[in-house]
Image 1 (cartoon, helix red, strand yellow):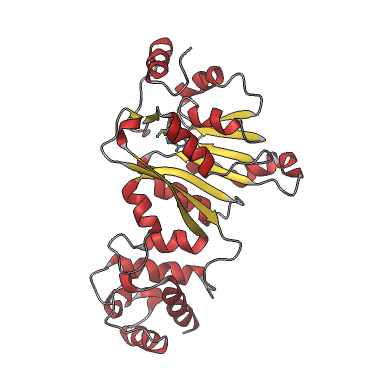
Image 2 (tube, helix red, strand yellow):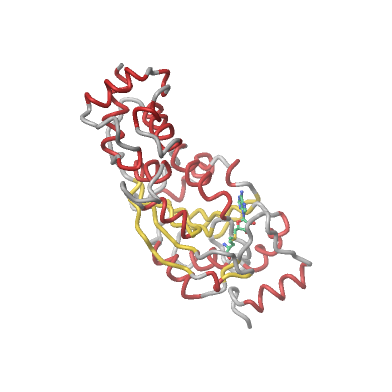
Length: 290
Ligand code: SAM
């Protein structure tokens, strides 16, 4: 019998169900056992863990995760994949398939419904997924901003987005996404993934990273909204000096921004891409106090 991840299985499923891979849903299916193992190992799934998988496709990662986890909840938007998943995963009693859009799913409520699984203290909640490229950032930001109580998020994404998430000040890839994700998480690189392991093959290479949610955020903020506005304004016009890019943030005048920068020891002529998260924090705290 063909393995679930084999190209032959995908071909047979397409024939049997009249299934067409949807480009608009970012359907690039994994066909490499090594990469599947790396994602599952990278996610550090334990036998008492509850796993939520985003976008199971035909279930290759779902089946692999179910071998380690207490329970896997797989959230798939494509109605046509539901009967396929019901068949490919029928031998697993610890998998639930949820037909839903992850961006519209109340994951806090889903966790609440599964709280009997969280009986033991050691139980963790881990999110995994090989994400559609076009919604990688909204999905990550939704999970982080809504404060869904998870331990980690292990996801495959476009290499370029992974680079942006993990980069630090002074690099081209450093931006609002790096600051936002690193505020909530520590970033652990898991694997580099060549485009050849997908059907159909995407145009770009991918990477898997794990985001470990911090118990305490990386910096202390007086007001998160002010911090994120400062970051957004700063990187919105990243070629401008901070004095110019930040004028107008929270309704502040140029003079007020100049004052806040000087008071926090940041040269007003610097650019946002040179600021560490700690500097963004002290600057936004100062602006919040004004
Ligand atoms: N996990 C499978 C694999 O690795 O072979 C499939 C990965 S494929 C890149 C992305 C999957 O996410 C597809 O099955 C797609 O239908 C699903 N998807 C796309 N948008 C979604 C959304 N908003 N909510 C849930 N699933 C979504």
